[in-house]
Image (cartoon, rainbow, N blue to C red; front, side, top):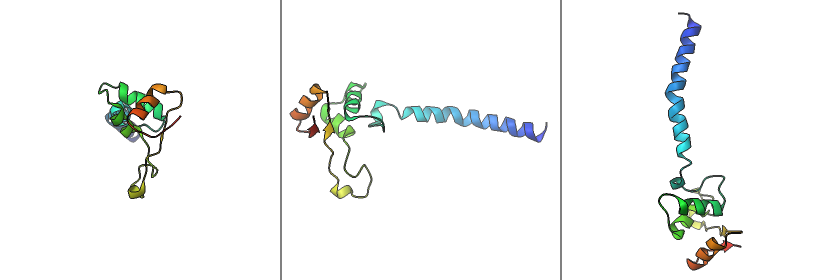
Length: 106
């Protein structure tokens, strides 16, 4: 066995050992229970949270999806305020926001 083939087989074993768990870990971040994803809009996040297997109520889903003025960083946490939800073209969510007194943009 040469050094090159030994290195190659070692590399293949490491790829198999870490690739599958790594892919599973990355895909587990796409579950609705994890909260807002980087590419979610307010409407898509609310619908995903309320339509998941857990069936969250609107207040719990809104608290999960609502962004803050400090963008979730610990700096400025004491003065952070919630950014109004953007609920364009979602009259059902607008009615729920009014019912539970959440600020939103039409």
